[in-house]
Image (cartoon, rainbow, N blue to C red; front, side, top):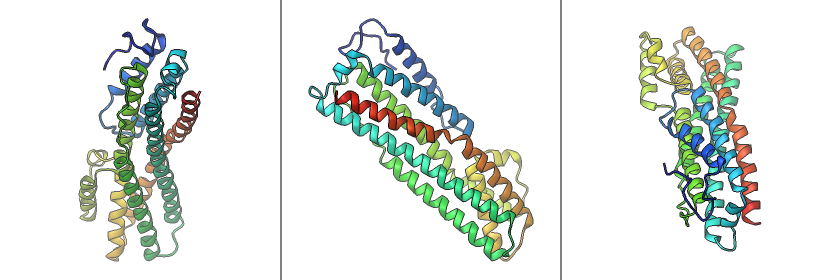
Length: 277
């Protein structure tokens, strides 16, 4: 990553303390670019991401940076910055909606399993509803990532512009990792379904290869198949309840997306004020 203490037309020639803070925060996020394997690690990234955006807000308030982003002189750049901030909002909103929809479906299905009185057909219908909701979520996340195109950013000689591009890039990387986590690996999930249906022992190590979203999908798919074949399986129902509880706890760990979304909205308002000053 380029150092941001070189001479530029938008930042002081002497390194500003905020630039060192920015570099440190960016390096921490870059060092953990690999796909996250737990909700805890993703939640940590979200917290670090918020710190990074807070630092950029402070940098944007520096007089020289505000002059460099003057709308009259850099109209095309301003439009790109605003478009980029909208794309980040769209991506974050997709994650927020996906978690909210899955949480509601999870709580509803848990309640139905606990107070189940309507027989196997009733449970089958509710499991289908949950799985269909998961398909809708996955499609929405896939669409959101298709529309995440980065913006090129003109006038890259301005260091504040290069920094904003870095922020956009690492933000998208974090949410791409989160989208992958929520969607889960389809092939591995169906392998677990097959083992569950054939009454083969599924070891903790095998289950841990998948996250809470994929494990819930696998157990509920196997339960649905069992229901369709008219074979009642109390073990599968118990497993489903356990996995749904784990999924709900996992979603709670990721609910920092909500506060980060509000933070991005606030940042966009601040950016609009600076660019239109």
